[in-house]
Image (tube, rainbow, N blue to C red; front, side):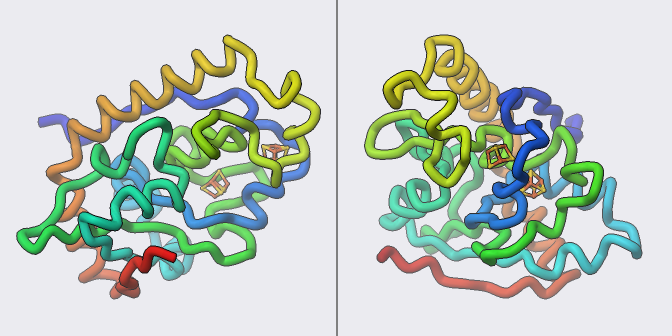
Length: 200
Ligand code: SF4
Ligand code: SF4
């Protein structure tokens, strides 16, 4: 099996070079299989190892998975964490993420995102989010007021988001059975912190 995932779609707005607020003040960002694989293959080099120390592994019980999906912007009409990985025998999902640090993302470099096309789904879709049963531009982005017509997205924007989510689901499902093993391998290497997800 070819284990080199390709997922090149992203919203054009996410490569805007305006305020970079989204990369300087990050929410919790779930790390997808293709992102972790890219980290492992492309930036697992001595000069980049320090970038990986902030990653945590969240343990999410199956009955909390919908809440986690909504909290981490992996809910676009349905729970995309189900596409990301599979639970262990006790029904626990282990999910790697950059925690909400209220600070700069370790992958932000002067030329932009070090992860390039392999940035996580949240970043590929940002500033578009699913909020209160609607797609919208998040209010933390200055484009929130500029790019929306009466708060609504254009047909074209909605179609692009739907295409990205569709592509994501196909790719994630293809690799989800490998996700736990990949995390275990990296957890052994980096000793990432384990955090139990608590539904607020
Ligand atoms: S917060 Fe919005 S305007 Fe600023 S860089 Fe991110 S997407 Fe662009
Ligand atoms: S992974 Fe890349 S796009 Fe996402 S917050 Fe970090 S630097 Fe920005």
